[in-house]
Amino acid sequence: MIKIRPRTNESIQQMLKRFKRLCMREGLTRDIKRTSYYEKPSERRRRKTRKSQRKVTLAVGGA
Image 1 (tube, rainbow, N blue to C red):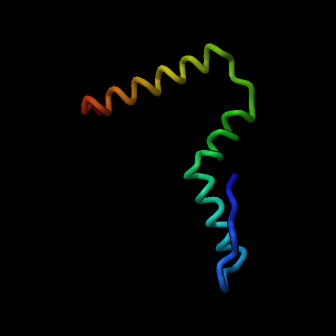
Image 2 (cartoon, helix red, strand yellow):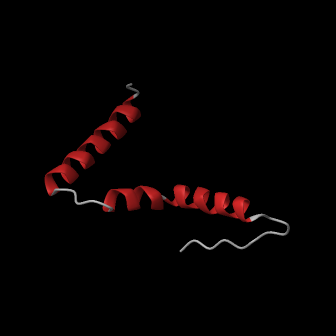
């Protein structure tokens, strides 16, 4: 759970920006977007294989 405590003389906009940045770092926004609609099991497997292939190509030094 992400908690934000207001700093001295910090505006609400700055606090909100800090909160959004923490959510992005934790990967919450990505998870929310992914679970906001139904994903078929075959699509889920396809996405995972693509992700693993990207990791392999980056590790090897590919494009």
